[in-house]
Length: 76
Image 1: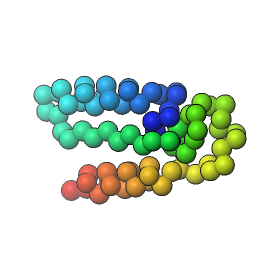
Image 2: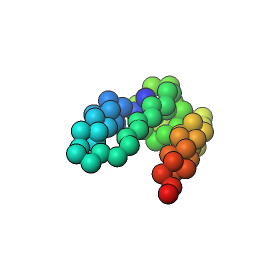
Image 3: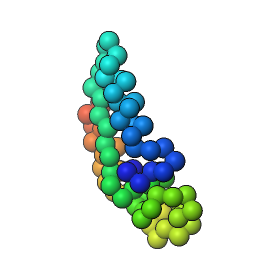
Image 4: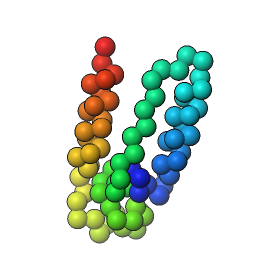
């Protein structure tokens, strides 16, 4: 999630860059989801202190959609 303050989204971009640079690099995809925090739920600030005050505590539908799309593409 783009609001992740524990593992900044820029780290995913860096990992993707490193993966693409490998000799036998496979396809690499990074998905940024706006308004989602480290625990993959919608948030305002992304700070851990906010977790107990979140109204929605289930994984964001956008996250689920992105995971399902990846699984479908990854199946032989």
